[in-house]
Amino acid sequence: MSNTLENLPLIKDASRRNFLKIAGVLGTATAFAGTLAACGSSSTSTTTTAASAAAVNKDLTIEAGISYSLSTGFDPMSSSGATPLAANLHIFEGLVELHPATREPYNALAASDPKKIDDLTYQVTLRDGAMFHDGTPVTTDDVVYSFTRVMDPANKALFAQFIFFLDSVTAVDAKTVEFKLKTAFAGFGPRISVVKVVPKAIASADQKAFDAKPIGTGPYKFVSAAKDDKIVFERNDAYNGPKPALAKSMTWFLLSDAAARVTAVQSGRVQAIEDVPYLDVDSLKSKVNVEAVQSFGLMFLMFNLSKAPFDKKEVRQALHYALDKETIIKTALLGNATAASSYFQPTHPSYQKAGTVYGFDADKAKSLLSGAGVSGLSLTLTTTDTAWVKDVAPLIKKNWDAIGVNTTLESLASSAVYGPDKVGGLKYDVVAAPGDPSVFGNDADILLSWFYRGATWAKNRFAWSDTAEYATVQTKMDAAIAATGDAQKALYKEIVDIIAEQVPLYPIFHRKLPSAWDSKKLSGFAPLPTTGLSFVGVGRSA
Image: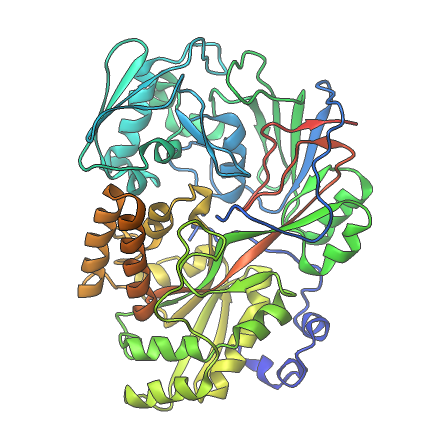
């Protein structure tokens, strides 16, 4: 996308529909940031959304419309795409799981809550009779393998950063696994949900084959998948865990085209869809249930701190103050977002208002630029080609142009944005993109760790890791994981305040995620506060 939109009517007329006609994206929907640049538990309902209590017919099939194609495989050590992550909620189990909708922890492969032996030792006992989809029993060796392969630096596992506190995992006996920690971690139980248990014999023999055809212990078995077509599941009749499948099978149609997705739920071809286009919410409400759930999922600005003048916090702050977030949200998202007043959304348990809140203040933005000795600034704003991001980008440009910053828009596929010629090589000015690490968990440490712990983002993507502020954040994050109650709350406030002041990567807003479903045909369905759909505990009632 170029910067030629500055002369179009959008700049003089903030009409949402006029803008969408100009941009050519009427009726399109969001796409997931390819690298998962992740969750509040409360929701904002757009219709009456009481779950259907109708009797479930376990011989029926659940059909769903999914927004995204398959961008990765299914191996839970490496899978990062939105669609396989959602699928894996049904195929695999951890020792502990988080309910996809409520985010409440429950024991899955664990027979009971993890037993704390001392501050640095926990033991977990496996549930009796658990079996993999191929009929082999789950052993403590499988559990140990599942964790140690994620912990092995050679595997560069996506989830290793979330279990950094683990020192070792060993089998005590045929039913018990022991975890030794490097440092005390108050949230041990919910956190180990990020590691899914896999069959050692199969996953270690041929990882590529396992990635393509996963075998887990979950309520549904994987049958087949085609990148831009569908994923097929069947019920795991041998499942003996707490969340059995309530349908004979599931077919997820991969409908990246928003119009096709909306038509599918309107026609009854599917019983639920995710990612309802904001413009279609009202028209769908007369036919099916629609609910927009407040999520952690954010749109962030990320600055290349290795490049002047973005190495100056005043410049970064100025570009945040220049944004009229409320108008952006109203115009581009039809109100389906909450302007950031902290790193966390207001519904999150760890929310505390940040010490620096970026309300719209164009004069302050100009003053900060002037004070930093910056004038005549020209920059390129690189964005992902996600439909709603493309809706937002021209409004950001309008705001920045208004304070004298000559802004060029560049819209690329996520893979290109994060590739070596852009973010991966620190060859960019500013990036605006979506991110949602809450798909991995809802606790404050996970949400902060994704962007601010380790090298992936802070060092390699926005070059903040050599700063004194980064070092302070690491120290405080380490202290917070061992703390509880008010002490932990105070530490997270200090961390958020540092990040909010420095804004190397920081949210503009947190989105609301609209889903649609037919409550006459689905029993127990609830929309998620994260990307994707879940049919855990959901059945067909007609």
